[in-house]
Image (cartoon, rainbow, N blue to C red):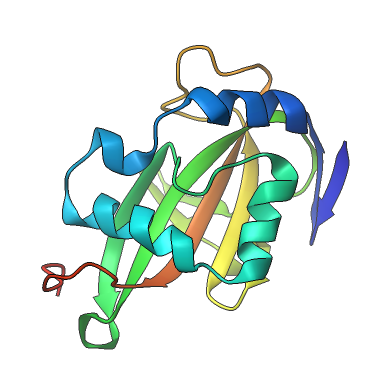
Length: 159
C-alpha cells in the first residue's frame, strides 16, 4: 500500500508488518529501565492521530525496536525521546532526517521529518539496525522524535 507522509512516499506491506507485531514482545518486557517503562506506559495516552498513524501502518506503539531519552523537559514532566520502529516495505521517496556532520556524528534535521502531531516527529530510511530475527523483508526504519509525558508513579531520574 502506498503512503505519503510529508516529503516521504512509502510502499508498506501493512499486513506483514501487523503480523510481526502481533508476536513481538513490547519494549517494557525486554527492559526494566524507567525510560522504557515510561515510554511503554505513555503510549496509552498518545494523541489519537498518533495512534491512528501507527495503526494504519500495522505498528504497535509499545513495540519499538529502540527508544532512548535525550533529556527531561518541563521540570521532568515531559521526556524527549528518540528511537525507531521497523516496517515491512520500501522508501520510494524522501530524505532521511539524520544528516552526517562528521565521520561518527549525525544531526537530526527536524525540517526533514513528518510531524504526526505537535511534538511527534518521524522520518524514514531503508534498512536499519536492531532488526529482530524473523522481521519480514524489505525493512524500513521509522525514526522517531517524541516529547511525551512522564507517567510513572515515581520521580523522573532523567532530570
